[in-house]
Length: 249
Image (cartoon, rainbow, N blue to C red; front, side, top):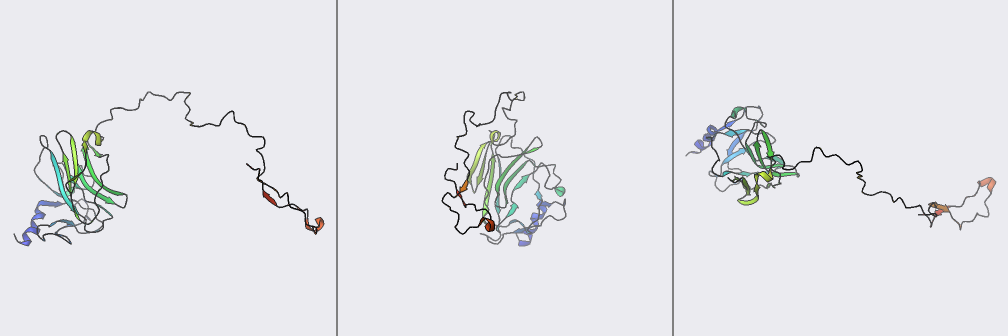
């Protein structure tokens, strides 16, 4: 296969959305570093700070009697500060040329990084028209190497998320997503009793102020004496300097 041939075939398989005119452009590239210059080629986002919308159609399938596995690799070649490396699995009625951020999808899976606060692996299922996020925190990798992300949904309604083929999360769909209404809810008829008092502590009703409590914070210095050369008419009335009262409480 000639190099030209490889670089053209992906365009026949992938459709770029025209929903917005400023979507970023994908290119086929092995990136800055690779094991094999030809075999390691993959789709690469070529422009910073853009949204991307590219989709590839495949035959309808059902996971009715078999596990579903979604797996792909992501390599962030630069020190990423904000970007999503997740994929979305769409229903087959998707109009690919009009795909956009709010297009209905069945599953969204993969890493999403934004600032120091968000470094998570999304696992979102659309159920009865609503997107349900996993209620566990799975950490994404934000280094510059290739990482393999795997989601397995089993027949018994359990799931597994693997990162570089190591299990990082697993459990049951029912427990780790809010697909179903909760088994118990607060009694809508319940009312707060009239004698309910939410104060944890109250002033001691039997406590009294000590009789010697009201002592001033500062008192005239008892050791101060009026200077001999003080003249009331000239200097005004003499007042001793104030000092801290040792009996102040």
